[in-house]
Image (cartoon, rainbow, N blue to C red; front, top):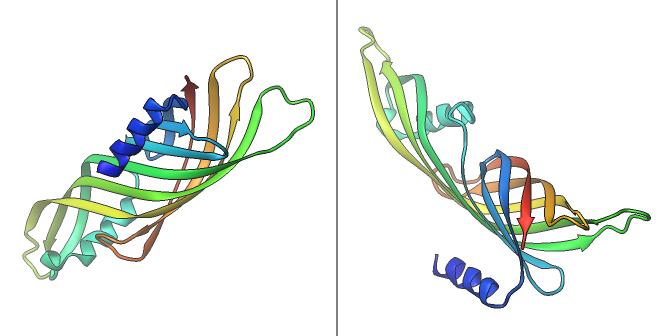
Length: 189
């Protein structure tokens, strides 16, 4: 966390090109990108996900918890989800004859940390099938690798972007690969 704050402070103090905006997709959130010298950039996101997303992920997680051995999954409800994401990007211009504005492609690496409050509904395996409810705080963490494209308008300080990424989960369900995708726009200042 200290490294993230130090990097953000360095970007602001050095007066680099900044952008802030909204990312739609999985996760959905507020995104900040600071452009460094050369073709480097640093990106942060704080976001969430709709409660109906990743249904099979949470069902599989239920089956991995030792506390739920000898119980049968009946359903779940995700109450709160918070995503924190940080990434270092490498940007490359795509020259297009006659294009007004700038088109870039980028790739980067970073990490995702996710917290979710999940209420599980389950029953005993043997009759009588008594219903139970339990709330679990699901914490996921792991490295993320991403790629995308962004277009910056020439006369308007707006950048539009689209990206995909994959995260390798190290905490909660190790070595599970999870995919993410999103589109969005940022105001540059």
